[in-house]
Length: 191
Image 1 (tube, rainbow, N blue to C red):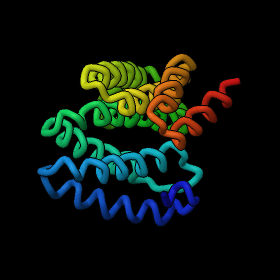
Image 2 (image 1 turned 180 degrees about the horizontal axis):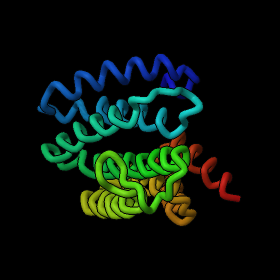
Image 3 (image 1 turned 135 degrees about the vertical axis):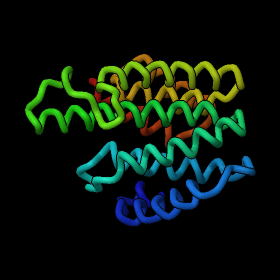
Image 4 (image 1 turned 180 degrees about the vertical axis):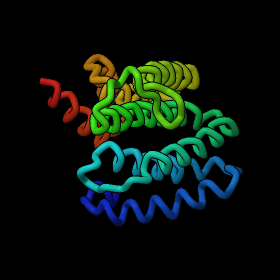
């Protein structure tokens, strides 16, 4: 909600506090999954739009939050599609950040490995595989909203019109008007 109100610094502070808790405790109740989702959503959104809020530690913080969510997905199968989709988003953003670092250093992106040993192209390939896995899992679990989230992330980051259109249809079917509006705006950017 704070991001929607343009209160990025406050959103970051709240997400930072939540992430600290998230990384200390083991997921024991499925009812906490919404909080995990919100923390990851906030951190990924801030990292996606660095002009909104410049924080050098967002890469590592996003990775830690997404990793914590992955533990939740292992324990509660219903959280797994979103955990996979957010890991894919982290990989995509990490590849983008690595390309920016390489550009600043004036090195060729194909010769530069990132701090985690993966080149940007490898991260993007893995991200696509994770999005596909998230979409398939959400479908097998009959979770159309989670499928739409994965399709939306895939479409937005990899600039895939058909994924965005499929996400938009699903968001409308489940009555997720805010997500439908945001996805429609992403589609309009492609025109």
